[in-house]
Length: 194
Image 1 (tube, rainbow, N blue to C red):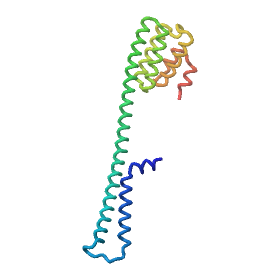
Image 2 (cartoon, rainbow, N blue to C red; image 1 turned 120 degrees about the vertical axis):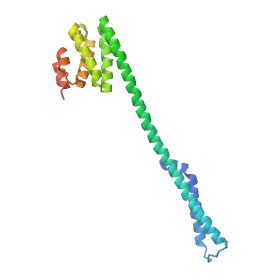
Image 3 (cartoon, rainbow, N blue to C red; image 1 turned 180 degrees about the vertical axis):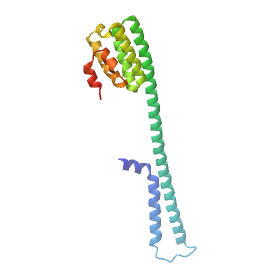
Image 4 (cartoon, one colour; image 1 turned 90 degrees about the vertical axis):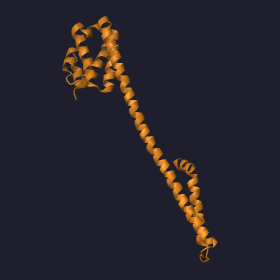
């Protein structure tokens, strides 16, 4: 498949090579002695010019192909870098937005929304692999648990969400023991310990 595409793309160079080889063969087959001023010298000259032209065309095609491939790789690398930066920017913005919603639901006492927003903020911190953001979620979870006994206020689905968040945050922060102790998760401590 690739060979067919290469032949289709380089048919002119191939034609030039064939013509030059044919002209050289025709010149070599002549048995007559070469005389200056005869048509033989002209034939040899045309053959050599054909070979030179073929070499130049092949060099140009190869150079174009090589530079095109190099540009494609460079553009792909730049596009990947821009995409990663955009994704990180989106995740940072989403984290900030979710933390605002966490604070809002905290002060309103809406613990179902609090658990959902903490889950999203945790996912952002994990996706970014950002310890600072994980520490912010960690401190907010600790404050909520100490002030309101948050775990007791939640129903079972929200507790599971919160358990997942605690485990994920515990894996990112330097000292997860206070968070794990606050939520009485000895089993989780075993999962987090490397």
